[in-house]
Length: 184
Ligand SMILES: C[S@@+](CC[C@H](N)C(=O)[O-])C[C@H]1O[C@@H](n2cnc3c(N)ncnc32)[C@H](O)[C@@H]1O
Image (cartoon, rainbow, N blue to C red; front, side):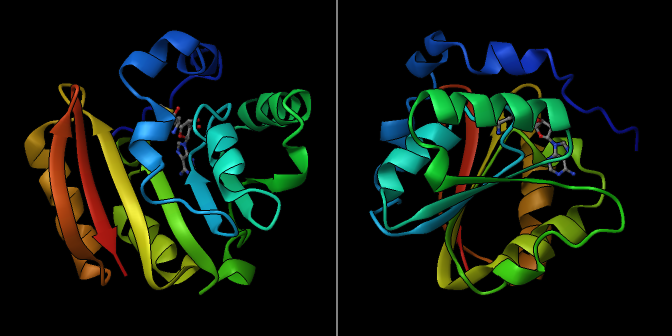
C-alpha cells in the first residue's frame, strides 16, 4: 500500500483555531483525561490536541507526543513554550530502528490517535506498540476523518486493534469523524 504522510506545511492548517468548531478538544477529550494522568498524542503534528491535553493533565501529569516529522515536533515545542506548557510536554521523534516507546511500557493512562492510522502501513505494529504503552484498563481514543477514510477501512483497523488485545468500549460518528474508544 502506498504511504501518504501529511506534509509538514499542512500542520499549520491543522492548528487553525477554526478547527475547534469540528474538533473541540475539551468536548472530545475532557471526559477521558484527568489531572495527574500520563497521556500520549500519537502522530501529534504541531500539537492541536497536545496543548489542551497538557492543560488537562496539569502539573502532576505528562503528555508524550510522537511524530515522524521533525518539523512538526519543532513547531509543537515552540507552541508549548509560548503557552507555558513545555514542562508538561515531551516530544519524541520516531526514527527507523530506534525504539522510542520501550521506557513507557505499561505507564500510560490515555492515548489519542487522531487522523494518523491511515498514514501508517504497518497497523499491526502500531496497535501492538500502543497497547504495550498503556496501563491495564488504559484507554485509546482512535479517530479518523470520515470520507478520507472509509468505514470499511476504519472497521478493519479496529479488528487489528482488537487482535492486539484492545476491547471496544464505544463507537460513534461525530461531525464527519469516525471515532472509537478502546480499552486495554
Ligand atoms: C493528518 S496529521 C494529524 C495530526 C494530529 N493528530 C491532529 O489531529 O491534528 C498526521 C500526523 O501523523 C504523523 N505520522 C505519520 N506516520 C506516522 C508514524 N508512523 N508514527 C507517528 N506519526 C506519524 C504525520 O507526520 C502527521 O504529523
